[in-house]
Length: 347
Image 1 (cartoon, rainbow, N blue to C red):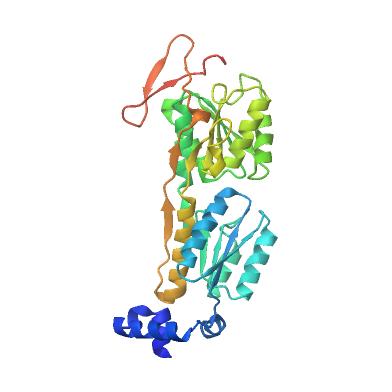
Image 2: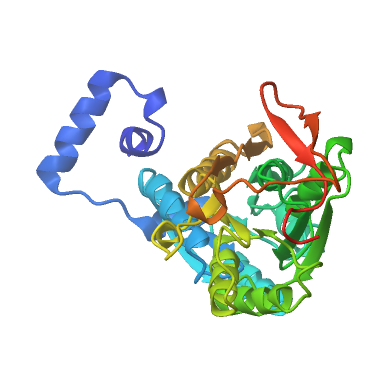
């Protein structure tokens, strides 16, 4: 039985000849591994948990797809559930998965400093933090460099002549910080960034934020809008159109995530692409490495770089002028120029 167990679970310690004989015997006898017995022996099931903030968000659907593919390759099951941005619900999910002896937990926490995460790890439950920045050396994490993404989005709009920007988001974290950092650069003197809070990372919340921006007087209204995700951006796009504003001529909009139907909107959406499927795959890889190697596992913080994909919703360059003349300033990117001053037509 030791030879069978090693062949199925630790093939690296079994010779090729012995592996061949064991697999031949399995095929002849119709043997199936007893998952219940394995769970009793190891103290863990062959299932892992994926706890996200909202499974209706297509970004997390893609993450779950990547996680499921990576887990299936290792004969592991993924259980998906959502906290719906409710901390008590998040805690209940984590408690139930721990009680069920899940192999480990991949979670997008509402608070990266939540003692629950460290409590699970201290009790021997492997934890991978998904889509959040955490510097804790005792936990693994997988995320996109959101500060770089916010900076890319802001620079894209500023280099197209926009000076009154708005950031629409559920929270003002890394993406907002990245955008703020670029807006405050000397070559974009006079630019500003309005923060508009969204109630949820959803289409309806985006429409509400868009209504708020559209209601501002023309001299104060933002002409470039960065959104925390694509659903918010699509909602802003709908609201602007309903208020008679033309994207991108009157207002440019940038989303974040790369959900499938953003490209099929009436005005195809510019966005920051996150490699969502690869995020899910990387999270499972880290989690199962900790499950398999135990104390020999070394915690990692895997960071992917977002990619700006320009489509119609922002692909218009606005003329920008001072009272009497244009002032050309060099950007920090070779070969690119920007113009400083108030937006023409809205003075």
